[in-house]
Image (cartoon, rainbow, N blue to C red; front, side, top):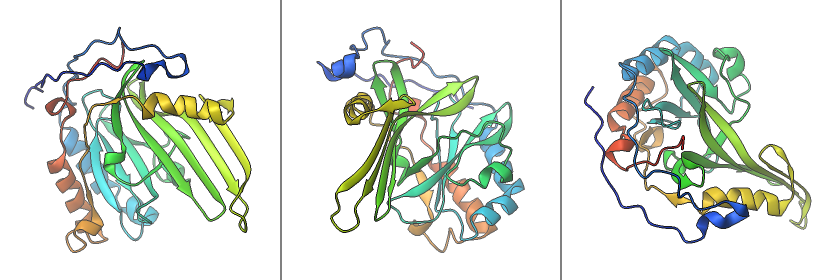
Length: 270
């Protein structure tokens, strides 16, 4: 593996963005860091996992996966694999897999059945519902750099929205619920008839929810855009079935763009 290079960028000074909810400006966060080199053979590990577990994938998603891509969500140098299920593009379910001690584990899934289908040792109760790989944003917050996503979905009578931050706990990618909002509507009038909020896992009001969300929504975005492959971009090449799935994974590996080829990070551990 070639050594990861660092491209220096000038980080803008935010004058008050991090004053939201008492958060102070991240003056203690250094402007550069070298991420660890990726685990040796990480591409082959994901390919072997997909090949060896194709029967599970075909059973859980008989119509095929909607998309596959790779993102270093926990900033440890080795990318995680994100696989979207099929469904409406406005609210796709994301299944996230991490390479841990040489083995691939499912760490987050919108499917309850994933807990029985995959090894659930590291499976988190926090799941992600989002549209595209670009929805995963790399931002500089008061606590340092991190990936986060605005996870949301809705029906005719309900809507929910959750800011999810991605941490690393013991070398394992760990999604964390920053804040959560759940609304119920009257079907005739469209008015909100019930609402529920949390912030940091504890009950909150609307202001508490929005204050926690602002820390991420108003943070300095690094401009990194993850790359991936979606089946609807080439239905013939990525048709449902073994060959289509494996081709999609291989193409996604080819399209992968390292964070360190794009931006200079501030240390997330600072």
